[in-house]
Length: 285
Length: 289
Image (tube, rainbow over all chains, first blue to last red; front, side, top):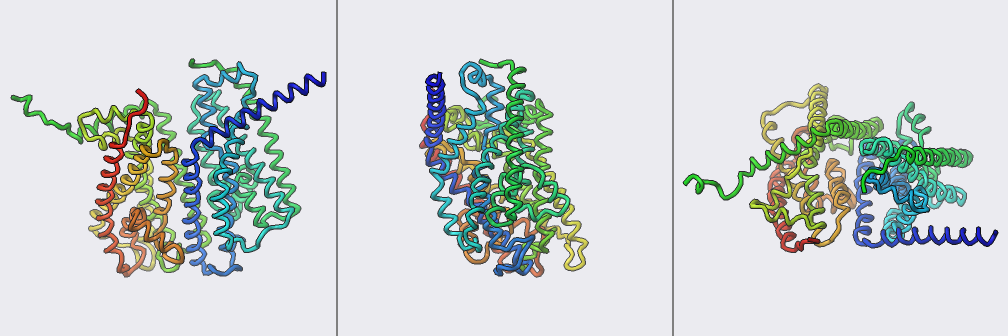
């Protein structure tokens, strides 16, 4: 008995490993395009640095490390953008929702019905492989940019506990980003075309995740509302942890809330998938 | 005899109108989608205004003595929207398709047609819903200008020359951005796959979204020179917006030379894009078939 389960466990693992490896190789096939893309991704940071430099200057507190705008010094602001980019690198899932919706529309999703592979897990591995490939190629540019900008991290490295929480927050941001995108894609079972829905989601994501600006800048009623939404975990939260904007006792409580969001979204995705398959009618060849 | 009188080349204006009409007909087939696209770009724009609104909650202007206060900057933003929406409506869908045509070998069809390939490839589709941002840009301009007109010091004054200069410089900006875009798309011939076209485009034009003064210090200076004189994206919005918003009075001495340079840059960009395009066609080997 145990032998059989062990064997099936092993074959299951090797199956997942194979999927992961294929996805990884697929992603690494176009390395040049990929590396170029990574390098380009840092360009907006430059304009943000200059924009905030000008803004801080006009308030009269540029250059000083004590003058603050909503709790951020100018170096903090730049560090925030760099860190939020790191968060986005984990949490953004380009093309996931639209691919899922397209597979539903074209009937390609049938392959998950006739093969003993779970789609939610399969796509997750694909994305994980994507991220691993992404970091293999882009660690160097990332490290270079952070090294060049080390002057903006005025507080130096945070304490070990904060670093652990930061890494956890990044990993959870990946899972959260994946699940949110997947759920939007799975709505395709009902609407077939989700591009406009996806756009609304991307818009909210862009604005409310803290990608555009630190959420602390928001005026009050909005700040509290955004605090309750899951978007902030995608970019703002990891950066805020690193910069010490989240107090230690609040830190683990917030991570707990993020966990709850994750569990809720896993259940939602499972439900959407199961319900969706029931009404699925397999269009196309 | 009448047959001989027929022109050898098609009437490009009529061809363009046909393209535009076809696109409109197609867009109107999916009216709900069209409406949704317009609404979503509206919400995108509102969100953008929101971001700068938040900035101006904390600061009175972008940079010291640059004159880019809240409403001057909103004039700048309106100009950005107008230029970008024109580019997105007429050239963006085509450039994306151009690089796809290169990759899949579909470009053969365009090269066989008895008309200029660059014209055909650049204007085949019109994305009408992108023009909603043009409208929005005009609304933002009108609101901001009326605010500027009623401010206590240095109120904005209308000068008839602006009616003539502003559209010309908008067109210059569009020409520069178009040239850049078609050059980027043409690189697919050499790179094989060019999925980052849109990203690259976004990141490059990102520099043009802000008043150029913000780059004029520290290590921004080389960038300012690069994006003004080598890849002239900084003059695209800055020159027309500055003319209209009149952020400083008296005007800076470099404004008119820069305006002159913009005209030159527009012409050179178009010629450059033409050169890159023909080079790309020469290197093009049909895929498949």
